Image 1 (cartoon, one colour):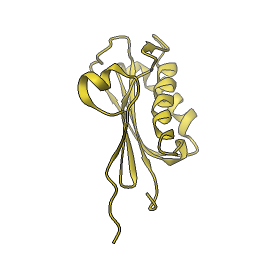
Image 2: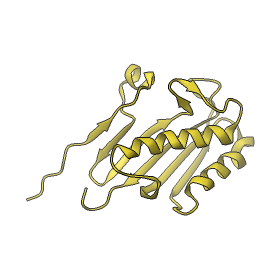
Image 3: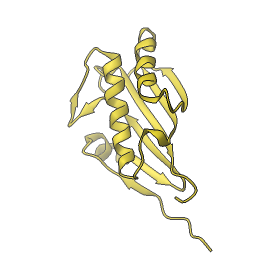
Image 4: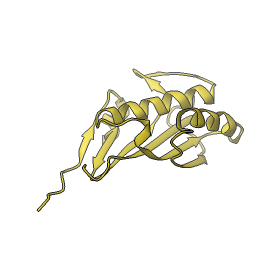
Amino acid sequence: MNETPAPRRVQTDSSWEESIGFARAVAAGDRVHVAGTMPLVNGVLHGEGDPYEQTLVAFRNALDALKDFGLGAEAVVRTRMYLTHLRDVDAVGRAHKELFDGIRPAATLVVVSGFVDSRVLVEVEVEAFRGASA
């Protein structure tokens, strides 16, 4: 009889993870869920005022979390993009296409009223599939 392994969690240096109490990524069964990820590197916002650059940085941060599970972009089956301005849809979409065009995950793009840091224009989430052997 196969036992289902306990969920595995990965933390980063994000102060939000500690203050709110969440993990950057959680592997459960054959899926890895990456939490909402902003365009911050070592606590510093990248791409201020540039939704395209912020999207690239945020997705790269999310993809970095997948590396702890031995996964890369090819394992991504779903993405979510949250942005604060409708005017940024084309820039965010262009960045998404640049990263995921060959993979074509299911994707959702939603305009929201804002984020905890008002300079952030984009936050992203990804879900990846680890396969039946997970």
